[in-house]
Image 1 (cartoon, rainbow, N blue to C red):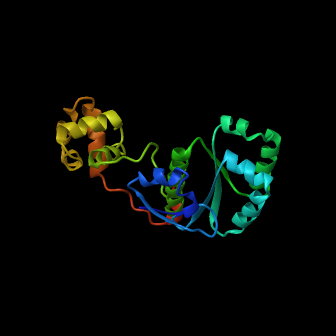
Image 2 (image 1 turned 45 degrees about the vertical axis):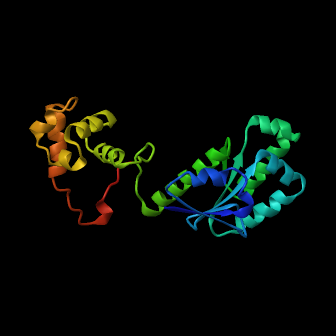
Image 3 (image 1 turned 90 degrees about the vertical axis):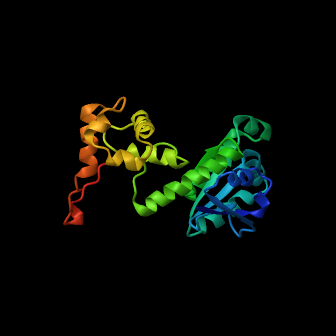
Length: 225
């Protein structure tokens, strides 16, 4: 589960409702002393709509908040939410907004992320959470969305085998019924599956049968990205 604390002043902003739709999110709404969202106790997010940004520039609140955010020992980011239409309605010159963003990003070191609306803001926070966990573990993610449901998870695992893409993974599962049965099938049975063929079947058997080489010295391990 991804643990997210949301400031109670964000309750009506749409992002909280979007986050509640994700089964993988454990969401608590309470008053935060700094920022709008705290993700996995490691990433602090300040969210502003374009109109919020303009208002905070005018009343001087933006840089007071930004200096406090920059001083936090946690990773932090600003999510700027809205579209060009919102910017046009703000009445503030584009150059003034650009100047403020230069100060935030280049000189205070706060990364800036952009989103169209509340739903995309919620997605960005989940992406950031997953990337943070990858960085912490050193794992290399495979591209694509995280699968939901057992059949999708099993198809995703099969796609880690050489020569097996989404279509072949689907055909294997349709033929054998489960990931376990695919792994236990011999080359002849695998080759009989539509789209697999003898060469791919033998490659699959080689991948699941052969023991991985042992590495005596960790410094000698080469990771191919």
